[in-house]
Amino acid sequence: MADNVTPQRRSWNMSRIRSADTKPEMILRSVLHRMGFRFRVHCRGLPGRPDIVLRKYHTIIFVHGCFWHQHSGCIEAVRPKTNKKYWMEKLDGNVKRDGRNIQALRDEGWRVFRFWECEIEKDPIGIAALIAKELRGDTNEPAGYRLPTRTQLLKAAESRTGYNKKR
Image (cartoon, rainbow, N blue to C red; front, side):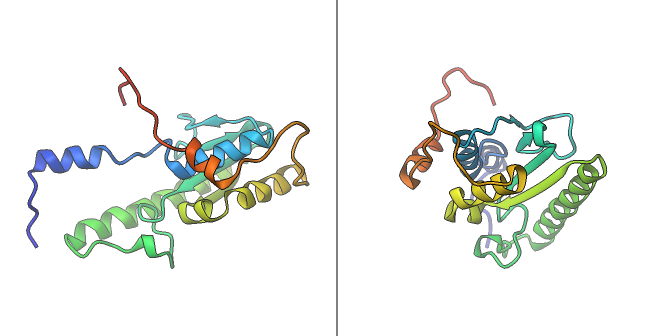
């Protein structure tokens, strides 16, 4: 099947795919913040530019998209049927790079968690509770905090209009 868009249009389309501040990332960050965790995002000085960095706990969290990072067994990780050679090299390269980055972080003494887009969308509060249990040894909410409902989480992750903002 021939591509029916110009190379310029394809480039524009691909440039709109977010690599940071994705919906699953925003959802997990919202829940972690409400649980009292404070963190940095997309730290440039660390291998792989981790999505969430909890310096206090010397912990890194990657929120991987199922397609781009090839979540094995996930329906979203199906490879395109066109231009197979390109996609095989691209996606396999992503997986290898992820492995190198995670190993480099572990070699530097970081604890690394990787969560998948589909897991976060199914149970963000459960994942945040798992992180809290691993890091603090409990799943209790700090006093005065309420965990959001699923609807509130999805609203929190909606894209915001970025007036005069360059990306």
